[in-house]
Length: 348
Length: 271
Figure 1 (cartoon, each protein chain N blue to C red):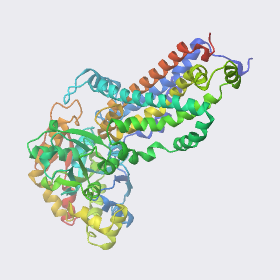
Figure 2: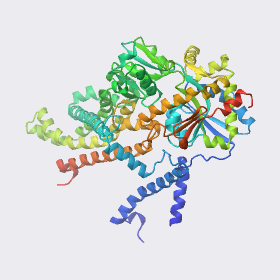
Figure 3: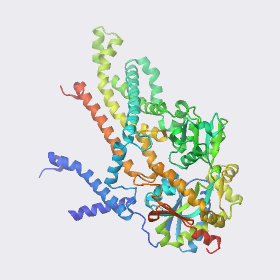
Figure 4: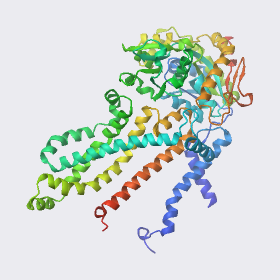
């Protein structure tokens, strides 16, 4: 009877796909996911044009590039072990996989937001006017971080406003209602909202350059066991970046993002894309990255994002080339320029 | 030997068979959770029961560090208030329009097609329009519930009002009753228990619309909390919240059923 029960349970376990975390061992088949955002659109071009396959073949592996429609869902899937790598921002990499105990490595530092995230007010053109308002945004997202930094810059705090958690899909229609007088969001939503005559952009991420970083994050154990994955992804990425000014490349991205070439250019202009591996390496190696991660970790800790077990902001250690921020015994997020350096030196 | 369809489980066996699927689910969960936690002690996807216990303790019995509120109770209060207002208004409208369209042929001819048409519009599909009409505040959340369940209530009660035996209506008329008296003394009392049973059936949808509304824009509420902590995969909070919602839904359904049996015993066939 016990045996039968065990068999039944084991079968049920196998049926639950989520029951089996990805094992870190040498393999030759990998899955990475991405979601719609201007800094990650190039992955779709690379997958469609066979660039990712070409680099995977070079290292005798298979890489499947999967688009996930919901950004948070893609990170959750990665954290649950369904994917070996996923695109995400530095803050979400810290608060979701790293805080969830999944040791993650920022393999490729793709870009930072340089105006792609912003705060919009109605009936006022200065940030101070936000005081006392209800601010609609996706709570606990980079928009929330941007808001905290913005409030900080004018001597206000979150106590001076009310945060209203609003689904990103509904922010644009929300802005058309009279209830909503302040919101924080990202592109392409921000671009659409700015077109409204009553919208005043009062703060954007170009005021905090280099703090909202878009990454390709891979599972550290998987990467250690399979350096080929890191080499293939990095090699493919910088080959894709070489097409940045091709009209075919831009048209492809615009189609995927459901915008036109002008809309795409507007988004690319607000993104500091590191199309040269050297730039990404220099950015990753700079001491400013460690300071940024400290700010992000402090914000995350203040909002309970590091888990209730976290005694302080440094609970989850972040390794950067300039040094470790936080608990060096619990490093779960690593900025590792190794593979980008290989790309910069032409060793891939 | 008795045929299978004639074999009845005893009292104990009924309970044991009823509990078995729950126990199996629990065992499967525990095994899966242990397997994941062994691989990664910080795993958030299938938290251990102790982690969920901590989360309940934190959400229900300790004031929040940020606002000083007891989050679970604040969320519950906010959600139940919205649900009560939404379902209450819907029930009232269902009662009034159901009786009017069910008893007065002219009202039925004028309103019934409109109500049938409205009931076929999926409320979630017109969400963006609802936002623009009602904003993003409490009104929009209550309106979503009302728009979601009122047409169903009206249609159901209209049908129930029409099912009242014609003999009774004729008898009241021979005794000299006017339309108003027939509605007040005959239709209304007979419709009330049917209203309660229709409300019980629509509560599932009401919860659905409530949580959808809270997921879209809110500052507190059970649905708000679930969709907020989903951002960092806090299953230790989400799972107890789901159980709590289930429990609340069960309790409301149970109380309505009990009230109906106590107040309208004739409807339930016990005298």
